[in-house]
Image (cartoon, rainbow over the protein chains, first blue to last red):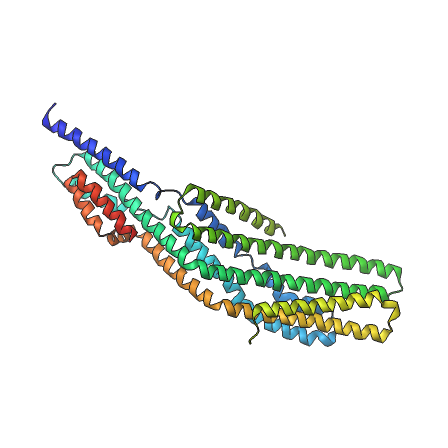
Length: 284
Length: 129
């Protein structure tokens, strides 16, 4: 064996050794954060659900159906007050969507592209007289692993920082939205149910006409079923918000080890629940 | 003490419950009430239900006001995250942040395995910082 061949073999061994060392100490930060991406993506998708806001704004108009014209001016004023809240209500949802999109992108692998950097490194290595093509390729691979890991680690730190800084305000916003949805939008449905009850029961009790009473009963049932369906959407959306809040809190609690298998498994479970809730709400 | 969103939602619920109870009373005692009494009671029911809805509107407004500061905070976090994403899209800039990469590149070019491992660690530490 010539001294050149021995040297080359030694270099190859050290290259392999270095790759092993690098892989060993970078383990854990190259984990795929797909469940976090999915969680963020579904949370962002849920924020596009604005039907409940539309129904809240439309409530005074629907009430006119049941109340005497003498009360319509009051209902118009209520509609105006609610209309002024529209942009702020939608802003809560759009800010949640923007946040979740950023979270998802920071958890994504595909935005890390070091091709250009590696090409430059290869060119630099090739210009070195003592470097043969195989060695250049091997070093390029090592540099690829290192830069990818460095970028991934940096990205995961950004992700950790984002979650850490945003958890308190995100939890507050979600809590506030949940209250608006369950007590505000949900409260409207209870009021609407009472209005339907008042209106149709009064007419039925005043009526002496059996056919008229039967028709009123059918209309009452129809209106009630509409309200119950909307109330179901409120309940489901409230669960969606609770699920997002719980999921984000989990990310915050485990922000230092987001790539751990158990953490990702738990986030994955949340994703399943969230997906199922979103499918339910889409059908309503 | 100013009214909080929580208080306003609670008041809204109480107005609604009163209206519903009044309605239940009117229907349960329909035959014992005069037409005027029925009309007066019904009027009160609608007033209570509308007061409940007005209070809901007020409560939603208060909840929005109370969460405004958090919205601003999230806006700032989103801005920061977007800048980080932009940086990630230009991975070279990220590498530049990790100044130790210079050492790593030098070690690779010099084909010094010991220095490669040492500088690789430094790159990761720099990226961590």
